[in-house]
Amino acid sequence: MRAVVLLLLVASACAEVYDRCELARILKANGMDGYWGISLANWMCLAEWESHYNTDAIHHDSDGSTDYGIFQINSRWWCNDGHSVTSNACGISCSELLNPNLSVAIECAKRVVRDPNGISAWVAWRTHCQGQDLSSYVAGCGV
Ligand SMILES: *[C@@H]1O[C@H](CO)[C@@H](O)[C@H](O)[C@H]1NC(C)=O
Image 1 (tube, rainbow, N blue to C red):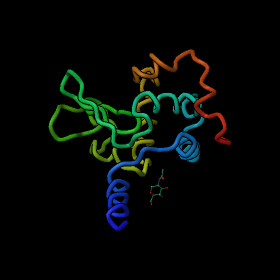
Image 2 (image 1 turned 45 degrees about the horizontal axis):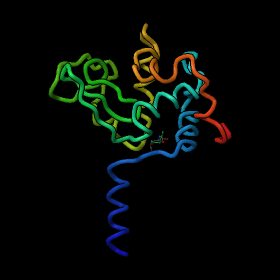
Image 3 (image 1 turned 120 degrees about the vertical axis):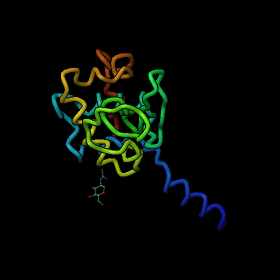
Image 4 (image 1 turned 90 degrees about the vertical axis):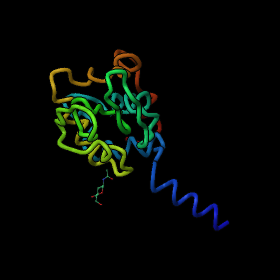
């Protein structure tokens, strides 16, 4: 029993996989619904396909850069991971994008969509969300 509790504590300190509706409520409470004209369902679809709502998600890209966190934000342009060339437009360390507290990731995602490419910056959004019926991503969440 003690071992189980300890394991749970360790897991929750390192990573958080959000429940769909829990994430929808957090994004909404942080002003994402309608931000830069982008609906909550679009943000949810993007997060589902980029990270499966896992704040710990990390993917290495072929150009040597890395994508971090729930929105898979890239080190080439948006954050500094200390070992690759970056514009660091969000002015943050990439590891901050892995925090279960989503404040930094949300602010950085807002910065990304203010760029001319907008939400099209996310390949997974173009592939899985653009032009689709996205109502299922927020259905039943009361948001
Ligand atoms: C992150 O933590 C700060 C300070 O505790 C809190 O004010 C903020 O609401 C949290 N952000 C989210 C998205 O939970």
